Length: 462
Ligand code: HEM
Ligand code: HEM
Figure 1 (cartoon, rainbow, N blue to C red):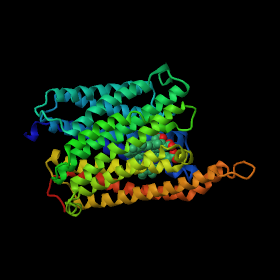
Figure 2 (cartoon, rainbow, N blue to C red):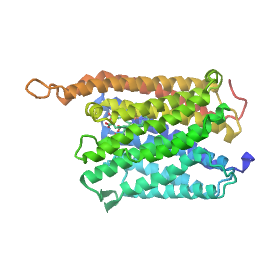
Figure 3 (tube, rainbow, N blue to C red):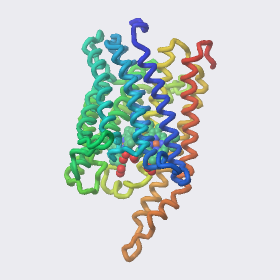
Figure 4 (cartoon, rainbow, N blue to C red):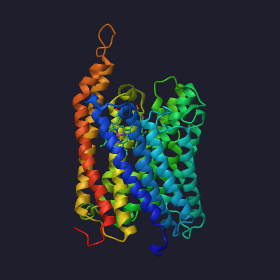
């Protein structure tokens, strides 16, 4: 089908938004990383760690990852169905509302207006706007599926459908709250029910943003950019359904060894272990797709983003279920080990797949070559080194921290105060900041490369 019939402006708008929120979110991340060993950086409540941490997580999870998901979803949906976008104006309104909502969320969170539910911190007014833009997206997504000219449903479409259905549902259930003023509300749940629903939401929101749509990109952009057909479509579909079924039961692994009924915790642990199978179904599919074509890692600059990305996904999905075991969790919960887990996923898996998808997609929607492949290669190595250093530092710090927090004297009293652990972690926090700067340098190259691809029409550089 002729490329010109497809809507590119919404894709471009969301891609540029993703880059903007990525930079803003990372600056917040660097700032809070600095605050951990330079407390003077907390000089105003607006930049206090407690507020800025939430800004970091929201801007990257929703601002960056979600706009990248919308950009690539609008791109993939049109091509996989061979159908132009049904409602272009609605898509444009979606783009504007999304960015306005992110802006409102950032300002209110920096002002300290917070529901205190992780990944659902913005207050009720923002929640309503979030729901509205999801409905706008869902209308276009389902309309295009109904009108599609391609009968075969490629696996990426299934992943996208699961996101459109699940995120609004999770959002509504967890955010049922009673407003008491314009910027304050109280959840209708209380106690362990509140905690259980919160982590059912929290875990699945992470999953349906940091995993499933990223897998949709992996399955679409890997074959497109390497020319290699996916090893097994059957495996891709089987692992999709198994992943969907298993994922939704695991939220309570965030609440192990708490007053939550023990059987709920045990169900979550069992399903976390089961989750290894569908997750590795995708990893194996990715590796077998590459089988015998490993020279592409040298000759195709995008191949390494995909293969390293899926490798980090594979490692995450082994580390995650282990963390979900009670013994392991008793040691590592409340430590920086978990922060290492989070950042291998986000800085490794998520960023690598989104970067490669953008490098493939942007030249096609602009009709220009990528500004610089060399810059893209440098970007890859910088984010790889930055990510590995940051996660290894956090895992090591977490082991030390867990040991110190659990260490007791012969009379049963704690050997170390909390402050002792903080002081012991100072060198790790310095190294985390330095690793973050390396990663950030790579991201700057990425953003510059994409912007120059948009703005520079003349002949590309090598
Ligand atoms: C089989 C797959 C996975 C399982 C079973 C799993 C399990 C876990 C567990 C048990 C925790 C809680 C640790 C604690 O607080 O004690 C956790 C935290 C987390 N995981 Fe995973 N994980 C998996 C894959 C992933 C992937 C692919 C990502 C992608 C980025 C990810 C992102 C996160 C995040 C962001 C948190 C922090 C949640 C918070 O704010 O407390 N996980 N994971
Ligand atoms: C320059 C790179 C980065 C730096 C320096 C950084 C720094 C931090 C810091 C200091 C924290 C708080 C840790 C704590 O409370 O002890 C954090 C948490 C978090 N970051 Fe980052 N970050 C970076 C990149 C990213 C990226 C790219 C993403 C997502 C795409 C991300 C997502 C998160 C999430 C979800 C959490 C919450 C984890 C939890 O609650 O367990 N970060 N980050």
